Image (cartoon, rainbow, N blue to C red; front, side, top):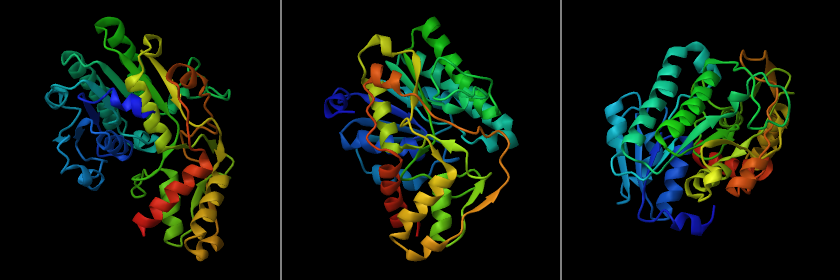
Length: 332
């Protein structure tokens, strides 16, 4: 992501669905910082008003409180929009196992509504949040975009269906799309609360509260943790790339290294103990593995580097240091 890329969006309007969420609000911030017009569509089921409070006084920012499950809301949001960054979804494998119907309604029906609205509004490009869960039971590492297995959860099914619909909307209606398979994104504004909180903010909150983080399993499961700034770069690259060969396909969004859960918990303890020495003595605890969790996740980012000029700046260490600083200032 370069200043020149962002300049190509000046005078354009970008719709960010789920713009009050973790990833969406970070995208809003970067675009607004570069004087780009942003429309945010959110129903605040998981997004937070506090995430977008700083943007409400910005003349380039428009908030539409609506639901992607409502086609009229989608049409309204897409009016006079040039590009869509579709981040709205119900994440979490456990949530989808507990309530597959709502996950499907949001992630499949809502996604289809957004594609229809974008098509009808003649949007130039539709970039959407896909998921590494699409790789399912395919065990080979690293994960390469063209080779997937069978989904292991309702959530994974919904995200794979997104990719199928995006493909059809290009072949049938010529709507240009780019799918971004996110791998365990973390960073500022990621919510530590709730039953479906992501592991990094959850562990951080527990450490700050002087509680033991609880790892599912023995800690040997590994993930390709991806700092939010890398993800923002990838979205902007996908939005602005002028190579037609780079469109209407999917990309891994990751750093390309994996970290075990025990390594993660240990790193967080180390970095947080610089702010509070008591944290350095907190014990890490374990419980049984969760249903639907894949053992290991590692992405190849060669395709993204080649076609989208992806150049992730933050590895797990530098990303965690940035995230921990933000959490310490905002979660205490």
